[in-house]
Amino acid sequence: DAGVTQSPTHLIKTRGQQVTLRCSPKSGHDTVSWYQQALGQGPQFIFQYYEEEERQRGNFPDRFSGHQFPNYSSELNVNALLLGDSALYLCASSGGVWVTETDTQYFGPGTRLTVL
Amino acid sequence: DAKTTQPTSMDCAEGRAANLPCNHSTISGNEYVYWYRQIHSQGPQYIIHGLKNNETNEMASLIITEDRKSSTLILPHATLRDTAVYYCIVRPYNTDKLIFGTGTRLQVFP
Image (cartoon, helix red, strand yellow):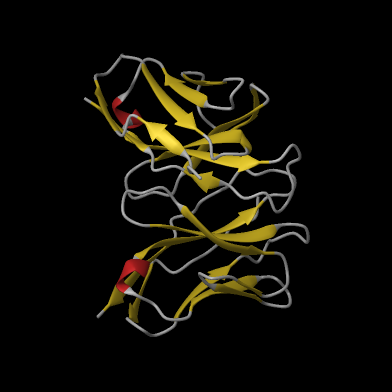
């Protein structure tokens, strides 16, 4: 049973460019969340997708956008990259139609984005 | 959102029990305590969660105090592979948005 997968593993971009990161959820999961983890910090919640719509959003600017496809996979897009966007971007998936207190998120290995 | 407080770092000898404390004094009655760990540059790994009863699985035990204001994650026989940053998280009600702090860096030594 494949877990959460993310691509690419590493990415280098320059300021002002745009980037797209991809995530495939764990089998049987239909909800995808994205997190940003700066060096030395804990992950910070960006947003969550369920039924192809953004369900929750953290404190991130509109430069960060996402998409979920009918097969539950998801993309994270970041426009007008800044040096401060350099981070590990993590995708997490969870399952079930209803969000319950016991729904557990499982994380992928992450994509390391470096902005020069 | 309830906040958690954890020690910055801890050491543990291989083969001994590692006891990682967490304070969450503002937790609400319907909020769960979750523990994840992150080995260097990998994605966080789910360990265990609980509401008010003690929980045990193949990885660890979770002890929650009766007033629910603190908890302890116990790794019964730490190995070198348990060296990681351990995050204690209080999950807000009716959401699976996780709010991470800076965690405890556990170093297991031979």
